[in-house]
Image (cartoon, rainbow, N blue to C red; front, side, top):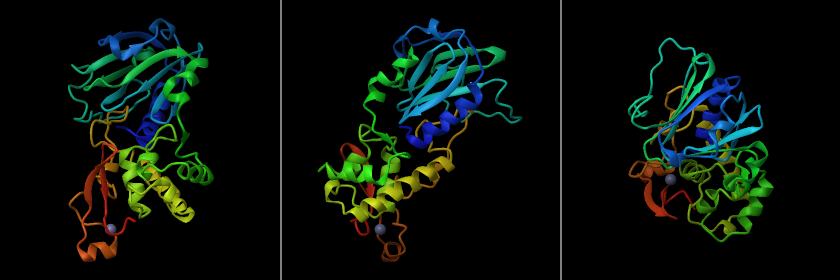
Length: 286
Ligand SMILES: [Zn+2]
């Protein structure tokens, strides 16, 4: 599922492409994907795109907003005057193309622009609400502080109050917003922490190492435009590249890259923790 770097990369592109566009019409091909009245945003001019954890919010100048979560396989694809490229090519991860059999919503924009929403698994959702109701949306009202904005002291405080596994706490969106499975695995490898250690057993110094590691891996994710292992693509139809730069995620059976481990032939192992694939080095992560 897209995490902070993927959703932030998507937000930046949506903001660049959509700001100033007016929605002329909306065609819906799957009723259950969208709630709220589309009439409230038809004719509305897009003025901003915000992110809350893994959720995106498109604000209109008429006081309404569109809240959306792409979940596992949702994709927003823009085509129009604000995307000028001579070699436009859509990633093969946009299954069926646009418009295609997996296109669930088409937003017709002014000046010949179009925004498509594709979703193969159909777990994603779109809600149209008044702007002042955005913060009441259940996902947003319960969201913890954003992983790129949280302070070390706040992180220490969250961990000190929980005896759950550190990786599970790290991925709990009500505690910290934006960290999912890929970046949690990599941050724990980078800070040499055993993912199943109890959060409240971490020494202050260890939490500080983890804090720095979270920022490092999220920034690497942003630098590479997110990870496209499953279905994530950016609104320009391209894939991110972080999946080619992960530290532990997806590396089961491969050598641990820490020099001492590598020399000793130690390999990354995989098991399930809280139902999620967990990749770790049994030697250097303690
Ligand atoms: Zn190792």
